Image 1 (cartoon, rainbow, N blue to C red):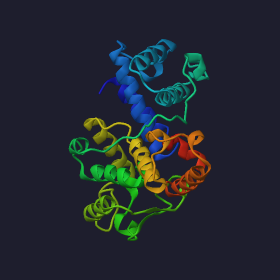
Image 2: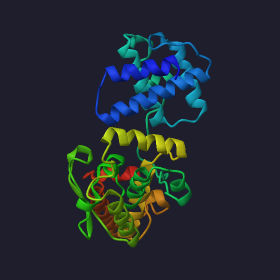
Image 3: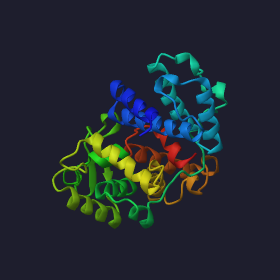
Image 4: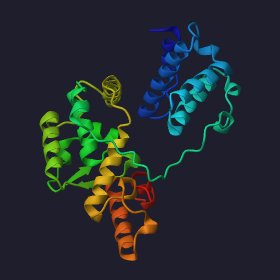
Length: 288
């Protein structure tokens, strides 16, 4: 391990800011920064030697790589955290505008859905990670939910119940089981987990989360939140009887009055099933 990678890892372990997921994401992003700096020719850096030229070099690389606005902002947040912890807050501009990073666009009619195919799954060697991915695709679960879930407890026959300690914001919710494919995935998850969760007995949540990330990175499985987008679009079509705007359907302006009423009802139901409980959020997945 390079000196910079090791020192950033130690910096993260000494400063446990945020949730386990936030800490793990930050450590992963800073490790990526160290690798990208080495690729750009900065081979003998220490954690304390961060300078504006390093920030500029990273941004140049990321922009050339075509990194999305949202991902750029996440990486800049990690860089600012690094600068703060070494007492160099002033080497990074306070706003992303200074670097020409545009505002993130949350609502578009461009689909971000990702389909989980057999080739993708075959590249994932850990059975628990593989099952979590299948649950995300089948039920639109968030990553944390798909790891912490206890399938035997969650299976209520006609619906999947999600305990508040597994979900974002601690919001208990139920997801209908409406297809043969969902039932098959859930039965397979129960067989793997027994009476427990999709965290192996000898591991903690954070350990399995790190293994999940490593498995996905190694297998080239990126943007797993796209599985939730695909679920939302599939569920919308099932409930409404037509595709959503992001899936090639009509926009809200093109719908007649009766169809708009159906659209609104479906979005409200889907919002509850996905754990948002706000109709507006469905536009991120479905378009408008």
